[in-house]
Image (cartoon, rainbow, N blue to C red; front, side):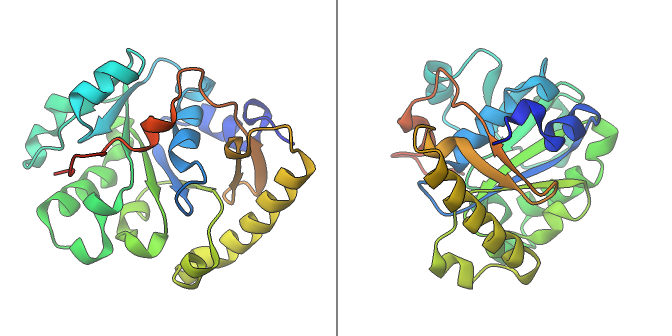
Length: 223
C-alpha cells in the first residue's frame, strides 16, 4: 500500500504549477470522492476549488469554504472574472456533459480547449471525472501534462475504452481488485491506481464527505 502523501504522483504534483488530473472508471467506484481527496492534499495547499456548473446552494451547504460554484461562461474573455490564475483548481465532475467527444465543435468545448492550451500560463490545474475516455474530446488532455487516476471499470465499459487507455485500465482493474481483497479493513473507495506513475494509491476519504456529494446534479440538469 502506498499512502498518497508518499507516492511518486504526490511528489510530481508538488513540483508543478499546472496540469490535468483525469479520474476515470465506472460509476459507484468513487471517482468523485477520490478527486476531492487528492485535491485536498499538500500539493494543492492554498488553492481554491472551482466546481463548474454545480448548484451554488448545494456547494455552500455541503463543501468547505475553499470551494465555490462557478458558472462556465459563454465567452472565453469572461474566464478571468470567474477563474483565478495561480489560485484555483478547475473541477469538472462527470465531464462528458461539457467536453463530450461528439460536442467537439461546440463553443463551450472549444473554449475549454483554448483555456487548457494556455493553462500553464495561468498556472491552473484541471480535475475531470469521466466514466470512459471514449466519451470525451481527447484533445482536452493533449495540450497539457495529464495524470490519469483509475478507478474500477466494468467489462462492458472496458470494451468501449480508447486503445490508448484500455491496457492501462486492464492493469488498474487487476491491481485494484487485488489490493481490496488483501486489505478488507480499508475503505474500498479509498483506493486508486495512477497509470502515469504506475502505482497504487490510498487516500482517506475527506472527513466532510457524504454520499450525496457524489450526485451534485440530483434533480438538476447541468447547463
